[in-house]
Image 1 (cartoon, helix red, strand yellow):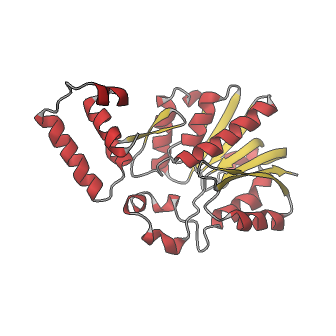
Image 2 (tube, helix red, strand yellow):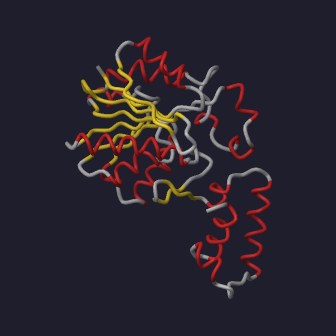
Image 3 (spheres, one colour):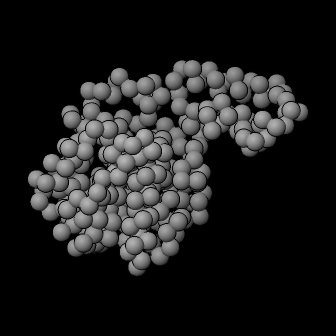
Length: 262
């Protein structure tokens, strides 16, 4: 749905089809005032997802607020890559979701994969609060362990070996953040800022992940536009991972990299 449809279906408590077919729908003063307020906030650059307090990802509903990055359709490609790998693997999996934010990756995996244990980390306690809410909202809280951690820093992670590590790390170049669209700049800078060249987190994850992956385990990462060659170079310098494939998103952009440990 476009933004106008999202707004009106929410305010009128109806689905998209009813919005167009039901000619008797009317706006009372309260609903008119609400729509006016929402439009004013949107004109100022606030994302519609923050205004409504929710969004959809992988067919599921997620709460979102200013403490978390808003899930994008492109990240569904990342989740799908893990789904496909899990189907091939067959056996129960132990998955680590680094920088979980709203929890959209970990919660979606927990919802649709059976016999799967998921650990989800984030440096932000406020983001983890949202992620835990979304796990409860989608009835998977018992399948996810949440840990506040700066990537791999928490000692509890050292006690486990994972079959898959998945992450959508920050990958925007620091100097470019202030030139992004106003609604994107409303999102947490910590979830956007990938450092001087946008690749800081990839270097850290690719270097450290082998310590937490099982032999033959997989590292699956979302990447930014036109970052494929640089990501390949980082993997090659590490000399540990074998890149299996780059996966394109709905716009034919190389969006996800899948690599095997050893």
